[in-house]
Image (tube, rainbow, N blue to C red):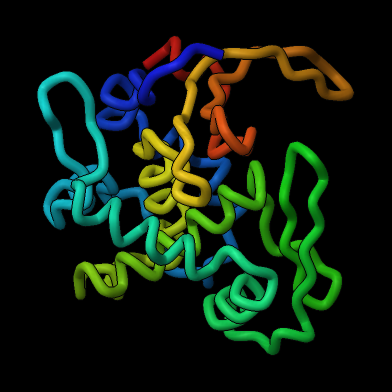
Length: 208
Protein backbone atom coordinates (compact mmCIF):
# COMPACT_ATOMS: atom_id res chain seq x y z
CA UNK A 1 0.00 0.00 0.00
CA UNK A 2 1.21 3.52 -0.75
CA UNK A 3 0.31 6.70 1.15
CA UNK A 4 -1.66 9.59 -0.23
CA UNK A 5 -5.13 10.41 -1.43
CA UNK A 6 -6.82 8.13 -3.98
CA UNK A 7 -4.69 9.44 -6.84
CA UNK A 8 -6.37 7.11 -9.31
CA UNK A 9 -9.75 8.69 -8.64
CA UNK A 10 -9.50 11.27 -11.39
CA UNK A 11 -8.36 8.61 -13.83
CA UNK A 12 -11.25 6.21 -13.42
CA UNK A 13 -14.13 8.18 -11.90
CA UNK A 14 -15.01 10.30 -14.96
CA UNK A 15 -15.03 7.54 -17.59
CA UNK A 16 -15.38 4.19 -15.88
CA UNK A 17 -17.45 4.72 -12.75
CA UNK A 18 -20.35 2.58 -13.96
CA UNK A 19 -18.08 -0.34 -14.77
CA UNK A 20 -15.74 -0.06 -11.79
CA UNK A 21 -18.53 0.30 -9.27
CA UNK A 22 -20.84 -2.25 -10.82
CA UNK A 23 -20.06 -4.83 -8.14
CA UNK A 24 -20.73 -2.44 -5.30
CA UNK A 25 -24.00 -1.39 -6.88
CA UNK A 26 -25.18 -4.97 -7.07
CA UNK A 27 -24.25 -5.57 -3.43
CA UNK A 28 -25.83 -2.44 -1.97
CA UNK A 29 -29.35 -3.08 -0.61
CA UNK A 30 -31.40 -0.50 -2.44
CA UNK A 31 -34.91 -1.12 -3.76
CA UNK A 32 -35.13 -2.22 -7.40
CA UNK A 33 -35.96 0.48 -9.92
CA UNK A 34 -35.74 1.30 -13.57
CA UNK A 35 -32.55 0.44 -15.51
CA UNK A 36 -29.68 2.88 -14.95
CA UNK A 37 -27.84 2.59 -18.28
CA UNK A 38 -28.52 6.25 -18.98
CA UNK A 39 -27.98 7.57 -15.45
CA UNK A 40 -24.77 9.61 -15.31
CA UNK A 41 -23.33 9.32 -11.80
CA UNK A 42 -20.43 11.68 -12.48
CA UNK A 43 -22.78 14.34 -13.83
CA UNK A 44 -24.99 13.98 -10.75
CA UNK A 45 -22.06 14.31 -8.33
CA UNK A 46 -20.58 17.34 -10.10
CA UNK A 47 -23.91 19.07 -10.78
CA UNK A 48 -24.88 18.82 -7.11
CA UNK A 49 -21.36 19.93 -6.04
CA UNK A 50 -20.72 16.76 -4.06
CA UNK A 51 -17.31 16.41 -5.74
CA UNK A 52 -14.89 19.05 -6.95
CA UNK A 53 -11.95 18.92 -9.36
CA UNK A 54 -8.91 20.86 -8.15
CA UNK A 55 -6.98 20.17 -11.34
CA UNK A 56 -4.91 17.33 -9.90
CA UNK A 57 -7.59 15.06 -8.53
CA UNK A 58 -11.29 14.71 -7.89
CA UNK A 59 -12.36 14.88 -4.25
CA UNK A 60 -15.31 15.54 -2.02
CA UNK A 61 -16.41 19.13 -1.54
CA UNK A 62 -15.21 20.24 1.91
CA UNK A 63 -18.70 21.03 3.23
CA UNK A 64 -20.04 17.69 2.02
CA UNK A 65 -17.10 15.87 3.60
CA UNK A 66 -17.83 17.54 6.95
CA UNK A 67 -21.46 16.44 6.74
CA UNK A 68 -20.39 12.93 5.82
CA UNK A 69 -18.08 12.66 8.84
CA UNK A 70 -20.70 14.04 11.21
CA UNK A 71 -23.22 11.48 9.96
CA UNK A 72 -20.64 8.66 10.20
CA UNK A 73 -19.88 9.64 13.79
CA UNK A 74 -23.59 9.51 14.63
CA UNK A 75 -23.90 6.06 13.04
CA UNK A 76 -20.79 4.54 14.62
CA UNK A 77 -22.48 2.52 17.35
CA UNK A 78 -24.30 -0.80 17.24
CA UNK A 79 -27.65 0.76 18.14
CA UNK A 80 -27.37 3.64 15.67
CA UNK A 81 -26.14 1.36 12.90
CA UNK A 82 -29.06 -1.00 13.43
CA UNK A 83 -31.59 1.84 13.47
CA UNK A 84 -30.07 3.50 10.38
CA UNK A 85 -30.03 0.24 8.46
CA UNK A 86 -33.63 -0.56 9.41
CA UNK A 87 -34.71 2.89 8.25
CA UNK A 88 -32.85 2.59 4.95
CA UNK A 89 -34.19 -0.89 4.19
CA UNK A 90 -37.66 -0.19 5.61
CA UNK A 91 -37.62 -3.27 7.84
CA UNK A 92 -37.93 -3.88 11.57
CA UNK A 93 -34.62 -3.83 13.46
CA UNK A 94 -35.16 -7.38 14.71
CA UNK A 95 -35.13 -8.60 11.11
CA UNK A 96 -31.57 -7.35 10.61
CA UNK A 97 -28.26 -9.00 11.39
CA UNK A 98 -24.64 -8.13 10.58
CA UNK A 99 -21.73 -10.49 9.97
CA UNK A 100 -18.13 -9.29 10.06
CA UNK A 101 -16.16 -11.68 7.88
CA UNK A 102 -12.81 -9.93 8.23
CA UNK A 103 -12.50 -8.82 4.61
CA UNK A 104 -16.25 -8.38 4.21
CA UNK A 105 -19.23 -6.98 6.07
CA UNK A 106 -22.57 -8.63 5.32
CA UNK A 107 -26.07 -7.35 6.04
CA UNK A 108 -28.91 -9.86 6.25
CA UNK A 109 -32.67 -9.46 6.50
CA UNK A 110 -34.45 -12.48 7.94
CA UNK A 111 -31.21 -14.45 7.48
CA UNK A 112 -31.10 -13.63 3.76
CA UNK A 113 -28.04 -11.64 2.66
CA UNK A 114 -29.02 -8.25 1.30
CA UNK A 115 -25.60 -6.74 0.76
CA UNK A 116 -21.82 -7.05 1.19
CA UNK A 117 -19.27 -4.35 1.85
CA UNK A 118 -15.52 -4.32 2.23
CA UNK A 119 -15.79 -3.50 5.96
CA UNK A 120 -18.03 -2.12 8.67
CA UNK A 121 -16.48 1.29 8.00
CA UNK A 122 -17.41 1.06 4.31
CA UNK A 123 -20.99 0.25 5.25
CA UNK A 124 -21.15 3.14 7.74
CA UNK A 125 -19.75 5.44 5.05
CA UNK A 126 -22.49 4.45 2.60
CA UNK A 127 -25.20 4.97 5.21
CA UNK A 128 -23.66 8.32 6.14
CA UNK A 129 -23.43 9.36 2.48
CA UNK A 130 -27.08 8.42 1.96
CA UNK A 131 -28.09 10.54 4.96
CA UNK A 132 -25.88 13.46 3.91
CA UNK A 133 -27.13 13.41 0.32
CA UNK A 134 -30.73 13.50 1.52
CA UNK A 135 -29.98 16.77 3.33
CA UNK A 136 -27.61 18.10 0.65
CA UNK A 137 -29.86 17.97 -2.41
CA UNK A 138 -33.48 17.25 -3.28
CA UNK A 139 -32.17 15.53 -6.42
CA UNK A 140 -31.12 12.50 -4.37
CA UNK A 141 -34.75 11.42 -4.10
CA UNK A 142 -34.93 11.28 -7.90
CA UNK A 143 -31.89 9.02 -8.32
CA UNK A 144 -33.04 5.55 -9.45
CA UNK A 145 -32.81 2.99 -6.67
CA UNK A 146 -30.54 0.71 -8.65
CA UNK A 147 -28.10 3.60 -9.29
CA UNK A 148 -27.80 4.63 -5.67
CA UNK A 149 -25.36 1.90 -4.72
CA UNK A 150 -22.91 2.98 -7.41
CA UNK A 151 -23.33 6.60 -6.44
CA UNK A 152 -22.53 5.85 -2.80
CA UNK A 153 -19.53 3.75 -3.85
CA UNK A 154 -18.24 6.60 -6.00
CA UNK A 155 -18.46 8.94 -3.00
CA UNK A 156 -16.59 6.41 -0.90
CA UNK A 157 -13.85 6.23 -3.53
CA UNK A 158 -13.37 10.00 -3.28
CA UNK A 159 -12.62 9.97 0.44
CA UNK A 160 -9.02 10.81 1.31
CA UNK A 161 -9.58 10.25 5.03
CA UNK A 162 -11.65 7.59 6.74
CA UNK A 163 -15.10 8.99 7.61
CA UNK A 164 -15.22 6.77 10.72
CA UNK A 165 -11.84 7.43 12.39
CA UNK A 166 -10.54 10.28 10.18
CA UNK A 167 -7.32 8.39 9.52
CA UNK A 168 -5.37 8.71 6.28
CA UNK A 169 -6.50 6.47 3.45
CA UNK A 170 -3.76 4.71 1.54
CA UNK A 171 -4.28 3.42 -1.96
CA UNK A 172 -2.37 0.52 -3.45
CA UNK A 173 -2.52 -2.85 -5.14
CA UNK A 174 -2.44 -6.29 -3.58
CA UNK A 175 -3.05 -9.90 -4.56
CA UNK A 176 -6.33 -11.58 -3.66
CA UNK A 177 -6.93 -15.32 -3.91
CA UNK A 178 -10.25 -16.98 -4.64
CA UNK A 179 -11.14 -20.61 -5.15
CA UNK A 180 -10.36 -20.32 -8.85
CA UNK A 181 -7.66 -17.70 -9.34
CA UNK A 182 -5.35 -15.09 -7.91
CA UNK A 183 -5.74 -11.52 -9.09
CA UNK A 184 -4.66 -7.96 -8.31
CA UNK A 185 -7.01 -5.41 -6.76
CA UNK A 186 -6.72 -1.69 -6.16
CA UNK A 187 -7.71 -1.14 -2.53
CA UNK A 188 -8.18 1.92 -0.35
CA UNK A 189 -7.35 1.13 3.28
CA UNK A 190 -7.34 3.39 6.35
CA UNK A 191 -3.84 3.69 7.80
CA UNK A 192 -5.21 4.17 11.34
CA UNK A 193 -8.09 1.69 11.77
CA UNK A 194 -7.03 -0.66 8.94
CA UNK A 195 -10.55 -0.63 7.47
CA UNK A 196 -10.87 -1.26 3.76
CA UNK A 197 -13.05 1.46 2.25
CA UNK A 198 -13.25 0.03 -1.24
CA UNK A 199 -11.54 -2.20 -3.73
CA UNK A 200 -11.82 -2.90 -7.44
CA UNK A 201 -10.13 -5.17 -9.94
CA UNK A 202 -6.77 -3.70 -10.92
CA UNK A 203 -7.23 -4.94 -14.47
CA UNK A 204 -10.30 -2.72 -14.86
CA UNK A 205 -8.32 0.32 -13.72
CA UNK A 206 -5.51 -0.57 -16.07
CA UNK A 207 -7.93 -0.69 -18.98
CA UNK A 208 -9.46 2.70 -18.14
